[in-house]
Length: 396
Image (tube, rainbow, N blue to C red; front, top):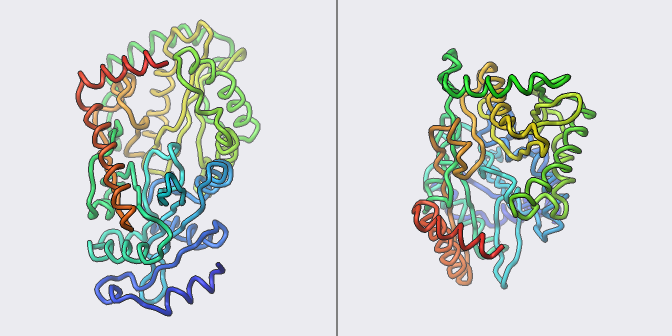
Protein backbone atom coordinates (compact mmCIF):
# COMPACT_ATOMS: atom_id res chain seq x y z
CA UNK A 1 0.00 0.00 0.00
CA UNK A 2 1.35 3.44 -0.90
CA UNK A 3 1.77 6.26 1.57
CA UNK A 4 -1.15 8.13 -0.02
CA UNK A 5 -3.38 5.10 0.33
CA UNK A 6 -2.39 4.65 3.95
CA UNK A 7 -3.17 8.27 4.80
CA UNK A 8 -6.46 8.15 2.87
CA UNK A 9 -7.57 5.00 4.64
CA UNK A 10 -6.95 6.28 8.14
CA UNK A 11 -8.45 9.76 7.62
CA UNK A 12 -11.57 8.54 5.85
CA UNK A 13 -12.82 6.93 9.05
CA UNK A 14 -11.51 9.14 11.86
CA UNK A 15 -12.07 7.28 15.17
CA UNK A 16 -14.00 8.73 18.09
CA UNK A 17 -10.99 8.42 20.39
CA UNK A 18 -9.27 11.31 18.58
CA UNK A 19 -11.46 13.70 20.61
CA UNK A 20 -10.01 12.55 23.93
CA UNK A 21 -6.41 11.97 22.89
CA UNK A 22 -3.73 14.06 21.24
CA UNK A 23 -3.45 11.21 18.74
CA UNK A 24 -5.68 12.27 15.88
CA UNK A 25 -4.64 9.69 13.26
CA UNK A 26 -2.47 6.60 12.86
CA UNK A 27 -0.55 5.43 9.77
CA UNK A 28 0.57 1.85 9.12
CA UNK A 29 3.62 1.35 6.92
CA UNK A 30 5.01 -1.96 5.67
CA UNK A 31 8.20 -0.62 4.10
CA UNK A 32 11.27 0.88 5.77
CA UNK A 33 11.76 3.30 2.92
CA UNK A 34 8.29 4.77 3.45
CA UNK A 35 9.04 5.35 7.11
CA UNK A 36 12.62 6.62 6.82
CA UNK A 37 11.95 10.38 6.74
CA UNK A 38 9.56 10.28 9.70
CA UNK A 39 11.82 7.85 11.56
CA UNK A 40 14.95 9.96 11.17
CA UNK A 41 12.97 13.06 12.12
CA UNK A 42 12.09 11.43 15.44
CA UNK A 43 15.80 10.68 15.96
CA UNK A 44 16.51 14.42 16.11
CA UNK A 45 17.41 16.25 19.30
CA UNK A 46 13.77 16.34 20.39
CA UNK A 47 13.32 12.56 20.34
CA UNK A 48 12.95 10.06 23.15
CA UNK A 49 14.15 6.50 22.46
CA UNK A 50 17.14 4.24 22.96
CA UNK A 51 19.97 3.84 20.41
CA UNK A 52 18.62 0.37 19.66
CA UNK A 53 15.74 2.06 17.81
CA UNK A 54 17.91 3.98 15.35
CA UNK A 55 16.92 3.52 11.72
CA UNK A 56 20.51 2.57 10.91
CA UNK A 57 20.42 -0.19 13.55
CA UNK A 58 17.02 -1.71 12.84
CA UNK A 59 17.24 -1.27 9.07
CA UNK A 60 20.20 -3.68 8.70
CA UNK A 61 18.59 -6.03 11.22
CA UNK A 62 15.36 -6.23 9.21
CA UNK A 63 17.15 -6.67 5.88
CA UNK A 64 19.70 -9.21 7.07
CA UNK A 65 17.87 -11.07 9.85
CA UNK A 66 14.19 -10.16 10.00
CA UNK A 67 13.40 -11.02 6.40
CA UNK A 68 15.20 -14.38 6.68
CA UNK A 69 13.17 -15.22 9.80
CA UNK A 70 9.86 -14.26 8.20
CA UNK A 71 9.33 -10.90 9.91
CA UNK A 72 7.44 -8.25 7.93
CA UNK A 73 7.74 -4.55 8.83
CA UNK A 74 4.69 -3.20 10.67
CA UNK A 75 5.57 0.40 11.40
CA UNK A 76 2.99 2.41 13.31
CA UNK A 77 3.06 6.23 13.21
CA UNK A 78 0.74 8.27 15.43
CA UNK A 79 0.08 11.93 14.54
CA UNK A 80 -1.60 14.91 16.13
CA UNK A 81 -4.37 17.02 14.60
CA UNK A 82 -1.82 18.92 12.50
CA UNK A 83 -0.35 15.65 11.16
CA UNK A 84 2.88 16.03 13.15
CA UNK A 85 4.39 12.66 14.18
CA UNK A 86 4.03 12.00 17.91
CA UNK A 87 5.54 8.51 18.00
CA UNK A 88 6.72 5.69 15.80
CA UNK A 89 6.47 2.04 16.79
CA UNK A 90 9.15 0.03 14.89
CA UNK A 91 7.37 -3.31 14.83
CA UNK A 92 7.63 -6.49 12.80
CA UNK A 93 4.94 -9.10 12.19
CA UNK A 94 5.44 -12.85 12.33
CA UNK A 95 3.16 -15.85 12.58
CA UNK A 96 3.44 -18.90 14.82
CA UNK A 97 0.82 -21.63 15.33
CA UNK A 98 -1.71 -19.51 13.49
CA UNK A 99 -1.16 -16.49 15.76
CA UNK A 100 -0.03 -13.19 14.22
CA UNK A 101 2.42 -11.52 16.59
CA UNK A 102 3.67 -7.93 16.44
CA UNK A 103 7.02 -7.40 18.17
CA UNK A 104 9.67 -4.72 18.26
CA UNK A 105 12.26 -5.05 15.49
CA UNK A 106 15.73 -6.07 16.57
CA UNK A 107 14.95 -9.39 18.24
CA UNK A 108 17.46 -10.52 20.84
CA UNK A 109 20.05 -8.05 19.55
CA UNK A 110 18.21 -5.07 21.06
CA UNK A 111 18.72 -4.97 24.81
CA UNK A 112 16.02 -2.30 25.18
CA UNK A 113 12.81 -1.87 23.19
CA UNK A 114 10.93 1.42 22.91
CA UNK A 115 8.85 3.52 20.58
CA UNK A 116 10.48 6.60 19.11
CA UNK A 117 8.62 9.47 20.79
CA UNK A 118 8.40 13.18 20.32
CA UNK A 119 9.92 14.14 23.67
CA UNK A 120 7.25 16.69 24.61
CA UNK A 121 4.47 14.23 23.84
CA UNK A 122 6.23 11.48 25.82
CA UNK A 123 6.44 13.76 28.86
CA UNK A 124 2.68 14.39 28.75
CA UNK A 125 1.28 11.14 27.32
CA UNK A 126 -1.71 9.69 29.17
CA UNK A 127 -3.41 6.31 29.36
CA UNK A 128 -6.04 7.73 26.98
CA UNK A 129 -3.29 8.31 24.41
CA UNK A 130 -2.06 4.73 24.80
CA UNK A 131 -5.59 3.36 24.60
CA UNK A 132 -6.11 5.35 21.40
CA UNK A 133 -2.94 3.88 19.90
CA UNK A 134 -3.87 0.29 20.82
CA UNK A 135 -7.41 0.81 19.52
CA UNK A 136 -6.05 1.93 16.16
CA UNK A 137 -3.71 -1.06 15.94
CA UNK A 138 -6.55 -3.41 16.87
CA UNK A 139 -8.74 -1.83 14.22
CA UNK A 140 -6.08 -2.45 11.59
CA UNK A 141 -6.61 -6.19 12.04
CA UNK A 142 -3.04 -7.14 11.10
CA UNK A 143 -2.03 -8.76 14.42
CA UNK A 144 -3.60 -10.93 17.12
CA UNK A 145 -1.27 -9.91 19.92
CA UNK A 146 1.34 -7.28 20.75
CA UNK A 147 4.38 -8.80 22.48
CA UNK A 148 6.43 -5.87 23.79
CA UNK A 149 9.30 -7.20 25.90
CA UNK A 150 12.37 -5.69 27.60
CA UNK A 151 11.10 -2.14 27.80
CA UNK A 152 12.87 0.23 30.24
CA UNK A 153 10.66 1.88 32.84
CA UNK A 154 12.63 5.08 32.32
CA UNK A 155 15.09 6.37 29.78
CA UNK A 156 17.39 9.30 30.49
CA UNK A 157 15.20 11.48 32.72
CA UNK A 158 11.69 10.54 31.55
CA UNK A 159 9.34 7.65 32.38
CA UNK A 160 8.45 5.39 29.49
CA UNK A 161 4.78 6.07 28.60
CA UNK A 162 4.29 2.42 27.60
CA UNK A 163 4.48 1.61 31.31
CA UNK A 164 0.95 3.05 31.55
CA UNK A 165 -0.31 -0.12 29.85
CA UNK A 166 -0.89 -3.39 31.74
CA UNK A 167 2.61 -4.77 32.36
CA UNK A 168 4.73 -7.29 34.20
CA UNK A 169 8.40 -7.56 35.12
CA UNK A 170 10.67 -8.84 32.34
CA UNK A 171 12.50 -12.13 32.77
CA UNK A 172 15.72 -10.22 33.53
CA UNK A 173 16.66 -6.77 34.73
CA UNK A 174 19.72 -5.08 33.28
CA UNK A 175 22.74 -4.39 35.55
CA UNK A 176 23.41 -0.66 35.45
CA UNK A 177 26.25 1.68 36.36
CA UNK A 178 25.36 5.31 37.11
CA UNK A 179 28.14 7.84 36.53
CA UNK A 180 28.23 11.28 38.15
CA UNK A 181 29.91 14.10 36.25
CA UNK A 182 33.15 15.25 37.85
CA UNK A 183 33.23 12.40 40.38
CA UNK A 184 36.41 10.51 41.20
CA UNK A 185 37.18 7.52 38.94
CA UNK A 186 36.99 5.28 42.04
CA UNK A 187 33.27 6.06 42.34
CA UNK A 188 32.84 4.16 39.06
CA UNK A 189 35.38 1.38 39.54
CA UNK A 190 36.51 0.86 43.10
CA UNK A 191 40.07 1.51 44.21
CA UNK A 192 40.57 -2.16 45.10
CA UNK A 193 39.34 -3.41 41.72
CA UNK A 194 41.44 -0.82 39.88
CA UNK A 195 44.51 -1.90 41.82
CA UNK A 196 43.84 -5.56 41.04
CA UNK A 197 43.33 -4.87 37.34
CA UNK A 198 46.41 -2.68 37.20
CA UNK A 199 48.44 -5.58 38.56
CA UNK A 200 47.06 -7.93 35.90
CA UNK A 201 47.61 -5.37 33.16
CA UNK A 202 51.33 -5.14 33.94
CA UNK A 203 51.71 -8.55 32.31
CA UNK A 204 49.81 -7.44 29.21
CA UNK A 205 51.83 -4.23 28.92
CA UNK A 206 54.91 -6.36 28.30
CA UNK A 207 53.40 -7.47 24.98
CA UNK A 208 54.75 -5.60 21.92
CA UNK A 209 52.32 -2.91 20.79
CA UNK A 210 49.86 -3.42 23.66
CA UNK A 211 47.08 -0.83 23.43
CA UNK A 212 43.42 0.04 24.03
CA UNK A 213 41.52 1.47 21.07
CA UNK A 214 38.10 2.46 19.83
CA UNK A 215 37.83 1.49 16.16
CA UNK A 216 37.36 4.58 13.99
CA UNK A 217 38.07 3.49 10.41
CA UNK A 218 36.41 0.89 8.20
CA UNK A 219 39.69 -1.03 8.06
CA UNK A 220 39.97 -1.15 11.87
CA UNK A 221 36.33 -2.20 12.20
CA UNK A 222 36.76 -5.00 9.66
CA UNK A 223 39.95 -6.25 11.30
CA UNK A 224 38.38 -6.37 14.76
CA UNK A 225 35.20 -8.01 13.51
CA UNK A 226 37.25 -10.61 11.65
CA UNK A 227 38.91 -11.40 14.97
CA UNK A 228 35.58 -11.49 16.81
CA UNK A 229 33.96 -13.91 14.38
CA UNK A 230 37.05 -16.11 14.52
CA UNK A 231 37.36 -16.20 18.34
CA UNK A 232 33.73 -16.16 19.50
CA UNK A 233 32.75 -19.59 18.13
CA UNK A 234 35.73 -21.13 19.92
CA UNK A 235 34.76 -19.45 23.18
CA UNK A 236 31.13 -20.59 22.90
CA UNK A 237 32.16 -24.14 22.05
CA UNK A 238 34.42 -24.14 25.10
CA UNK A 239 31.38 -23.19 27.22
CA UNK A 240 29.21 -25.78 25.42
CA UNK A 241 26.93 -23.02 24.17
CA UNK A 242 25.38 -22.73 20.70
CA UNK A 243 27.00 -20.17 18.44
CA UNK A 244 24.17 -17.67 18.00
CA UNK A 245 26.40 -15.56 15.74
CA UNK A 246 26.37 -18.36 13.17
CA UNK A 247 22.63 -17.97 12.60
CA UNK A 248 21.67 -16.76 9.14
CA UNK A 249 22.20 -13.04 8.60
CA UNK A 250 23.59 -12.19 12.04
CA UNK A 251 27.18 -11.58 10.95
CA UNK A 252 26.04 -9.52 7.95
CA UNK A 253 23.78 -7.41 10.19
CA UNK A 254 26.57 -6.69 12.66
CA UNK A 255 29.10 -5.88 9.95
CA UNK A 256 26.64 -3.53 8.23
CA UNK A 257 25.70 -1.66 11.41
CA UNK A 258 29.25 -1.31 12.71
CA UNK A 259 30.43 0.74 9.72
CA UNK A 260 27.53 3.24 9.65
CA UNK A 261 28.84 6.59 10.99
CA UNK A 262 26.75 8.85 13.20
CA UNK A 263 26.51 12.59 12.62
CA UNK A 264 27.33 13.08 16.31
CA UNK A 265 30.51 10.98 15.99
CA UNK A 266 31.22 7.30 16.40
CA UNK A 267 29.24 4.57 14.70
CA UNK A 268 25.88 2.86 15.11
CA UNK A 269 27.81 0.11 16.93
CA UNK A 270 31.10 1.11 18.56
CA UNK A 271 33.88 -1.49 18.89
CA UNK A 272 36.41 -1.24 21.73
CA UNK A 273 39.43 -3.51 21.89
CA UNK A 274 42.61 -4.43 23.71
CA UNK A 275 45.26 -5.69 21.34
CA UNK A 276 48.96 -6.10 20.74
CA UNK A 277 50.99 -6.58 17.61
CA UNK A 278 50.36 -10.34 17.61
CA UNK A 279 46.68 -10.65 18.44
CA UNK A 280 43.38 -9.06 19.41
CA UNK A 281 43.14 -9.72 23.14
CA UNK A 282 39.58 -8.61 23.96
CA UNK A 283 36.64 -6.99 22.17
CA UNK A 284 33.55 -5.30 23.58
CA UNK A 285 31.01 -3.62 21.29
CA UNK A 286 27.83 -1.68 21.98
CA UNK A 287 25.66 1.32 21.21
CA UNK A 288 26.05 4.85 22.58
CA UNK A 289 23.87 7.96 22.46
CA UNK A 290 25.70 10.66 24.41
CA UNK A 291 24.07 9.58 27.69
CA UNK A 292 24.38 5.79 27.92
CA UNK A 293 26.73 3.14 26.58
CA UNK A 294 25.04 -0.26 26.28
CA UNK A 295 27.03 -3.43 25.64
CA UNK A 296 25.94 -5.75 22.83
CA UNK A 297 28.59 -8.43 22.32
CA UNK A 298 32.08 -9.34 23.49
CA UNK A 299 34.80 -11.96 23.47
CA UNK A 300 38.42 -12.41 24.51
CA UNK A 301 41.47 -14.31 23.37
CA UNK A 302 41.89 -18.07 23.64
CA UNK A 303 45.64 -17.61 24.11
CA UNK A 304 47.45 -17.66 27.44
CA UNK A 305 46.85 -13.91 27.73
CA UNK A 306 43.27 -14.73 28.80
CA UNK A 307 44.53 -15.49 32.32
CA UNK A 308 45.23 -11.79 32.87
CA UNK A 309 41.51 -10.85 32.81
CA UNK A 310 41.62 -8.76 29.61
CA UNK A 311 37.83 -8.52 29.49
CA UNK A 312 37.68 -6.82 32.89
CA UNK A 313 40.56 -4.51 31.97
CA UNK A 314 38.77 -3.51 28.79
CA UNK A 315 35.52 -2.80 30.67
CA UNK A 316 37.46 -0.49 32.99
CA UNK A 317 38.86 1.36 29.97
CA UNK A 318 35.41 1.64 28.40
CA UNK A 319 33.91 2.99 31.64
CA UNK A 320 36.60 5.66 31.86
CA UNK A 321 36.27 6.48 28.14
CA UNK A 322 32.58 7.33 28.40
CA UNK A 323 32.77 8.94 31.84
CA UNK A 324 35.37 11.38 30.51
CA UNK A 325 32.89 12.32 27.76
CA UNK A 326 30.09 13.17 30.16
CA UNK A 327 28.05 9.98 29.91
CA UNK A 328 25.71 9.36 32.81
CA UNK A 329 25.29 5.58 32.71
CA UNK A 330 26.60 2.32 31.30
CA UNK A 331 25.19 -1.18 31.13
CA UNK A 332 26.65 -4.55 30.20
CA UNK A 333 23.44 -6.12 28.87
CA UNK A 334 20.73 -8.16 30.58
CA UNK A 335 21.63 -11.06 32.83
CA UNK A 336 23.28 -11.54 36.18
CA UNK A 337 26.78 -12.67 35.22
CA UNK A 338 29.25 -12.19 38.07
CA UNK A 339 31.58 -9.94 36.05
CA UNK A 340 28.75 -7.46 35.46
CA UNK A 341 28.23 -7.02 39.19
CA UNK A 342 31.87 -6.02 39.62
CA UNK A 343 31.00 -2.81 37.76
CA UNK A 344 27.22 -2.36 37.80
CA UNK A 345 25.82 -1.99 41.32
CA UNK A 346 22.30 -0.99 40.30
CA UNK A 347 19.63 -2.36 38.00
CA UNK A 348 17.61 -1.03 35.09
CA UNK A 349 14.08 -2.39 35.68
CA UNK A 350 12.55 -3.77 32.50
CA UNK A 351 8.94 -4.67 31.80
CA UNK A 352 6.85 -6.61 29.27
CA UNK A 353 3.40 -5.96 27.83
CA UNK A 354 1.34 -8.71 26.21
CA UNK A 355 -1.73 -7.08 24.71
CA UNK A 356 -4.43 -9.14 22.98
CA UNK A 357 -5.99 -7.69 19.84
CA UNK A 358 -8.34 -10.56 18.96
CA UNK A 359 -9.99 -13.56 20.68
CA UNK A 360 -7.17 -15.76 19.42
CA UNK A 361 -4.67 -13.19 20.71
CA UNK A 362 -6.24 -13.33 24.18
CA UNK A 363 -5.15 -16.95 24.55
CA UNK A 364 -1.70 -16.21 23.11
CA UNK A 365 -1.15 -13.19 25.37
CA UNK A 366 -2.04 -15.23 28.46
CA UNK A 367 0.36 -18.00 27.42
CA UNK A 368 3.24 -15.59 26.68
CA UNK A 369 2.65 -13.76 29.94
CA UNK A 370 2.61 -17.00 31.92
CA UNK A 371 5.82 -18.30 30.35
CA UNK A 372 7.69 -15.07 31.05
CA UNK A 373 6.38 -14.90 34.63
CA UNK A 374 7.65 -18.44 35.19
CA UNK A 375 11.07 -17.59 33.76
CA UNK A 376 11.22 -14.46 35.94
CA UNK A 377 10.39 -16.55 39.02
CA UNK A 378 13.14 -19.05 38.20
CA UNK A 379 15.70 -16.26 37.71
CA UNK A 380 14.73 -14.64 41.03
CA UNK A 381 14.70 -17.91 43.03
CA UNK A 382 18.26 -19.23 43.56
CA UNK A 383 17.23 -22.85 44.15
CA UNK A 384 15.06 -22.95 41.02
CA UNK A 385 17.74 -21.19 38.97
CA UNK A 386 20.41 -23.66 40.09
CA UNK A 387 18.11 -26.57 39.20
CA UNK A 388 17.41 -25.07 35.79
CA UNK A 389 21.13 -24.69 35.12
CA UNK A 390 21.78 -28.32 36.05
CA UNK A 391 18.96 -29.50 33.79
CA UNK A 392 20.28 -27.36 30.93
CA UNK A 393 23.78 -28.76 31.36
CA UNK A 394 22.42 -32.33 31.46
CA UNK A 395 20.41 -31.71 28.30
CA UNK A 396 23.50 -30.42 26.47
